[in-house]
Image (cartoon, rainbow, N blue to C red; front, side, top):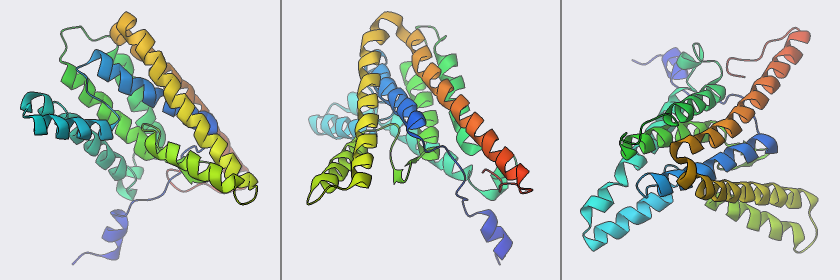
Length: 248
């Protein structure tokens, strides 16, 4: 029989992760960049946009082009694996060893991008795409809030919907300052995603894999911001004679 302690040990814990606009902007810029980077430079496959991969999978399957269709399955599996790994990292049994899962996922993504920037041109495209999809999913599952609201750091459809909904709530039937702030935040992260895509389209054909230093740099800035804020938060708890729970 499963004990209450065992059940508790297998229940994910909500841990602290940065929800500021600064970090969200950097993460979404990187998300837009990586999608265009893999699509333009590595086999016309998306690393982050699973919607795009599923659309291409269905389209090529209907056309009978099975070789092209199968190219879009591995990134989907890698993305799902990344979500699963991030979920496991929020379990109490794992938090004992990795108390800052969001920073761990973000740091791992930075390492993978820097390592990938030095790969030779003969390195298989699909393996690079799988690595990016895996770590991007882990990061996406770790940073899920923009201030009070849920958002997505590697895809933009949901963010665009939130922008539209908040804008109309904020303007009709009467002005709502909170809804308008939500609209501004989500509008800004959508623009950041677009900026990342444009930047990747301009740099990938010229720099090839070295272009990955751009998203790695933006993520490193986000990492430093998150680290400093978590350390400041820890010091506030310490001054009060308390300590935050594991992962917070």
